[in-house]
Length: 502
Picture 1 (cartoon, rainbow, N blue to C red):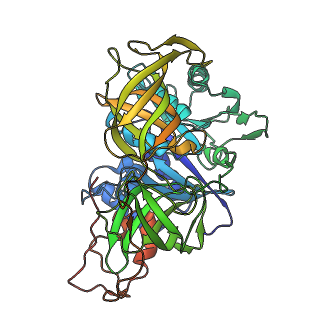
Picture 2: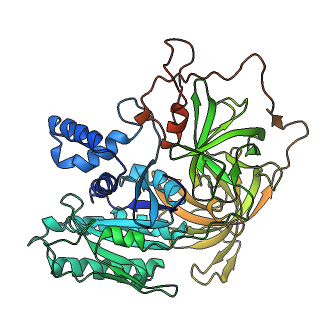
């Protein structure tokens, strides 16, 4: 995939078993994300395992790196093409255990596709207080995903099948809820689909002739259409902050034999170029970028929104890790945060939160415990007006300004300067108890002599032309395929690829 079309990122959200993986797999299969031979192989395997009805979901599962090898890449990044865009889909599982992963994925998305199941009892389970539909939609909005598409799935299993009445009932209820969160339903496409049968996925369904299409009314251009694919084409491309200094949170770091260390992640702001000297925070490691790759091709520069792999000089996989942030060492390089002030909304805490509370924060790709050091003021969650100074405690529904201190080295930024690095979710008791945005950061100055500079080349280790790797390509992040393509026949011994477990 070249650079002719714009790249956009979408997150697929919704309750467990709403059909997210099936719908996503269908789009990737039909829009050229996977070759036909591969899908036929997957269909055969799925049928042999008695999972024939999960054909498209099985595609996604088979592609996930965590398949048989137990290697975990938390969020699966898969790509397909529309007439306007190259789309990267972040497949976010619906189980409660996966909400943490959804948060790090959502923070990268330009648009959320909310899948709700129309089946009898299924919609009600998903939209209930205990279901994930509400929480996922709220998280997407709070974490900055301002565009939304709603896919009303499993229309083939309503009573009667493809029921217009059921569709209209669900549109009404979902509209009411998303309006409360902050979305304007007039700007949202509601598409009745069957991810399994393909109704209204790529082509208008003959089973729903009553559906006259979706309409979007917005200030900067209206849109209309019938299918989910057309709704994806109607996404407004975000303005990419290329003029800001580089910020690239790492999703993972790989070691590839004969190539070296390859961090992967999404450029959030600025540009990443081959030859650039980058600094990783909070570890304070500085090195040179040898090459940058995306979609199996070498790039001269990567732009905001690009999911890339980049090869760095003389840095071990032990030196940098998921949650670190890469920046240009010569232009406002990222630094460790000593403390930060945040505006926090408490969503779902069973008791009271007071100073000293230390839950885990998910901010960009970092996952670190942070202490609520001082509750400065309670505020109105909509207007932001101050209600009370130095509250003794906070409870569900409250919004507050809070000073926070990370328990371990962490790199965050203010939301106003670097939005993707300035919003977070607070996790406790295996659920999201709060979300917030960072108002200001007190940076920790590096101690003298602390910087670890790893430039230059070791003369005893010329770069081999052979790539040696023990894992099949499908078990790697897509960005790594380029580095695999540098390979010839692998040797039987010496270096193996090691992909760190997360």
